[in-house]
Image (cartoon, rainbow, N blue to C red; front, top):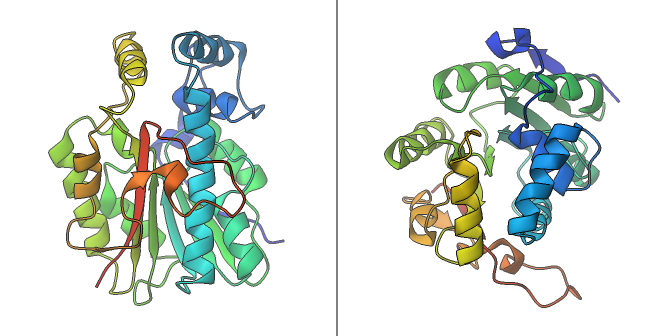
Length: 271
């Protein structure tokens, strides 16, 4: 296995603050991971006390990522991924799923959290045939992301852009739309966009729990309507079954009956 390449940025110099809960570590806790602190567990437990379904959402989101990556590599023939807002490494990271099928796949991860960066250096190893790289950057600076990613990815060949539970961190919807447009605009025909995010109007308990979390002083995460999530794919060709609850996007054979949950996602091809 080869070492990941890491591009440093401003966030690499920030101290990891273990005195306040952090969304990436809370998410890791809900996924059953160990890369979190008591303050994160307390915040996660407080959330689940109000809305236990968040654990299902977190784990269903991860399963959706695994299925979309599998489709992109095995059926669409994609061999390059740009995964922005990757979060803390857990099981079945993008490069692991992709390189199990096609070892030559190249993956660039993007995040701006120092704890994620530390774990990326330790855990995100590539196959010898492929490559993984980590960019210390922010989705809010798409030009820097694209410039750094071009050192590992060939933008003359299709790239799959993965935005998993990241656009909710961009509070202004128009800005979120423009960021997706800028990123996809830099990718060639035959590229793909994968988006999944928390959806408003599906589960009132989830809506109330997230609103309370946002009002607590923590970094807010905006739930969006299904129509708003669908609009991120404007101008692209949606892969069946379109934008649906993540549990209903091509569920694996023999899986339990898909649940209707407040997390929607889809996959689309750039013509």
